[in-house]
Image (spheres, rainbow, N blue to C red):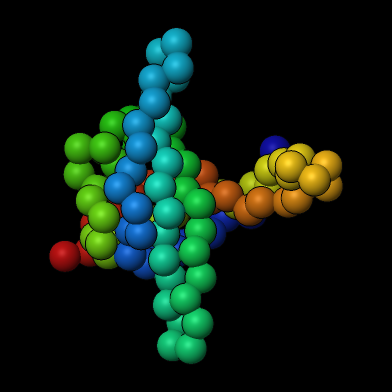
Amino acid sequence: MDYAKTLVRGRVASEPIFKDNHGIKLSSFDLACHNGRLTEFYNIVAFGAVAEFTITNVKKEDQILIEGALYQQRIRAGNGEIENKTIINAHCIHILR
């Protein structure tokens, strides 16, 4: 299977949310990345042990480095149009202190 591997460094912009759906552990949060002129926000998701690490160790405003994979999610908006949303599936999270 092919996927787009990525490294992203930024600050956690929202407190991580944790869900346990029939034994599948999931966490999600937003990451803000500033490149000098512009701040971009990314949706981050993590599963399993990485999700558990996120919930116990990652807090809003922490600076982190994420190694993961990009994927696109197609969402039908309220007006019926389909929107593409890029999400980063975190495989590894490093807290930079």
